[in-house]
Image (cartoon, rainbow, N blue to C red):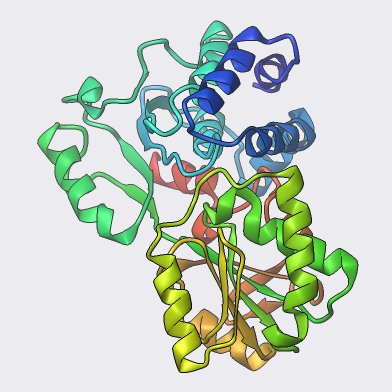
Length: 346
C-alpha cells in the first residue's frame, strides 16, 4: 500500500501531473490548494503512519476480501475521498467507489496506481452510481449534508446497491471551531490557514472563532494576515452576490463585521448557515461548551492553541496547526473508519 502511494506521489508521475492540470484548467480546484493537499499526503502517509493507524484501530487480521464496501466520495476539497479509500483497503475489504464529478481526475490517478499494484480492480470506480447497480454492498461509507442522506439512501435502494439493513457510516459534520487565547503571529497565521484554505470548504475548515477579544480589536491586523495568505493562495471560488446584502443588513443593525470582498467576517453568535462567512465570538470556555453542545452532528472539530487533548463539550481539543493537516488516522465525525469496518464486516 505505502509503495503504491509513494509511486503515485512521485514528481515524475505523469498521470498525477495530468490530473492536476485538468483539475485546474476545468476550474475544479485552485492549484495552490491541490499542491497543499499533495504536499501534506507526502509528509503524512507512509508505511509507519499506516501501521500506526492500523494499530490504533485494532487491526490484527483483515476482513474477508469478498466483503464489498461502497464509498460515495465527496468532492468539496481535493482528494477528500482518499481517507475512506485507504480505510477500506487496509481493512481488507473490496472497494467500490462512486467518485464525485467535482473531483474526477485526482482520485482516478491514484486508483490507477493502486490497480497496477493489484489493490483495486479497474472497473471498481465510476462517477455514476448506475455502474454499481445490483451490487448489494456489505457496507456503505458516505459523507455529505444532512439533507442529502434521505435521497441518497433512496437511490441506493432503487439501484440495488444497499438495502434498509445495510450498515452505513454517514458523516454530516460540515464545520469546525477555533478557540484562540492570544493574537500572536503564529496563532493568527494558523487561524488564517484553518479558515481560508480551500476557500473555507471541508468539514475541518473553521467557520466559528471564539477569542477573548472582539472582532473590532483585531480585524485590521487579521485582515492583513488574510490578504497575505490570498497573495500566495488565491481564493478559487467566489461568493454569491447575495453576500453583499448580508453585509448591508449587518451594517444597518449594527453588527460588527469585516468585508473582505470574497469573505465576510461577522461578530455574531449564530451557527454557520452560508459559505464564505466566518463567525467571530468574544468569549472563552463557557461559550465553546455551549456551542459544542448545541451543534449536534454539524460540528467536526474544536481546535485551539492551548489545552490540546483536553475534552470540551465531549470533543477532544485538537492543535490549531493541524486543522488542514490532519494525521492519516484522524476520526471523521469521531469514528475510526477502519475500526468501524472491522466491527461491521465480522
